[in-house]
Image (cartoon, rainbow, N blue to C red; front, top):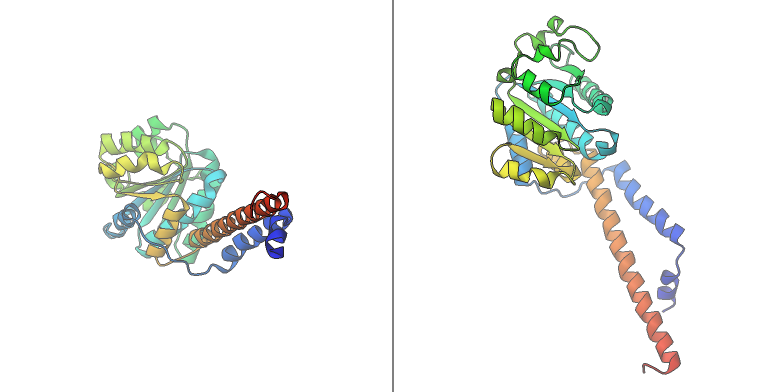
Length: 280
């Protein structure tokens, strides 16, 4: 009974510290954590994995730092997958604040696989235009992206020699923190028959499942869990798998705190009632 009483009166700062430890340890040590791969993520993986040799994969960065924990791990896993298969990632940006995130991931993973800029991949950066840009790429990509993110004309880079419109893009992958993915489906998909895979934050993913069910997109990666599944598929478990472990351990700890808190409450209530002669 004394233990339950102590638990009921534990300093909340101790609870915060314990939760912090439970979250931080998996992020540092990255323990193995069982991840079951869902059908939408498997389809997203297959859509990339089954592309022809030397395929061009356009990746649209449509998120910012607020959604980085959910989407950045998938971006890194996706880039690893592309470079493993010797595909050519073509990075573009619809959300201006996402440009540094895309550049950071692209340079990091390209260095791991010894890929050369302008030959194996390219970063076209951000351009305004949104819907007009999506439609314009269907005619000629140089209308909007005549230079890369550094301002160099794309004609100097061999990777862009034969890329003019969606006919030359084998797969479009949008990483979405908002409604931009729906616009990609409406214009690049419906108008130009572009093959599309979407990766979305967990809160946005439910709105895109009907695109997957109808076949308008070929795969769907939802939130950190989807990113963790993709890391498992490319055999490169990293921050998403670690994040799922940290999240799961924290949830289990919180459940234990709730259980002990309720037990302490009812034990204390029973003692008080006994003292009043109410319960025997």
